[in-house]
Length: 157
Ligand code: ADP
Ligand code: MG
Image: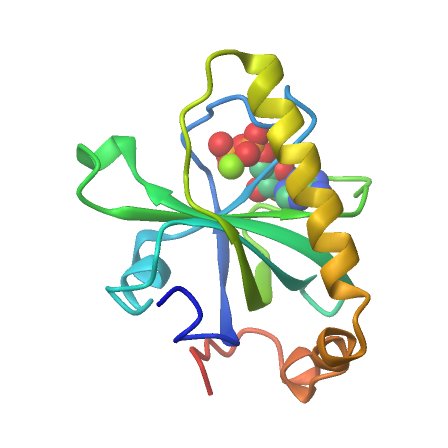
């Protein structure tokens, strides 16, 4: 069921998140606006996914993405957060993030400790890297979607 909507192409502005300290953990997550999240299929599964991402006209990088419940809205709305597997020199709030979501890794989980959370995310990142090296997944890195004019918000076409 998680795979039904994949691959899923999405473009939108990077907004401020809830300051849950992702960056302090070494795993910053670029958040999409509520409007972009609302445009997602309402029955898309929460959990961790992998795919490709690109900021503005920049290079296309591997990413892991979480679709989760948004604590700001008493967990009735989803949030979509992308961790790009690349070290950026600067933050990119306000820029257009383009992503293609390709595969599902696992459902959301609660962790007993910060260490357990961080190591789960490290495993997700390793899994994403391995998956994205497969020829069928590498293909999407070259998709024309990533070369369309910036600023145009396109969801799944
Ligand atoms: P917020 O709560 O505002 O989302 P985070 O701690 O999750 O704060 O940090 C996210 C921000 O960090 C992004 O919006 C982006 O500007 C910046 N950033 C820097 N490097 C990355 C990266 N590799 N992946 C995602 N975001 C990054
Ligand atoms: Mg974030």
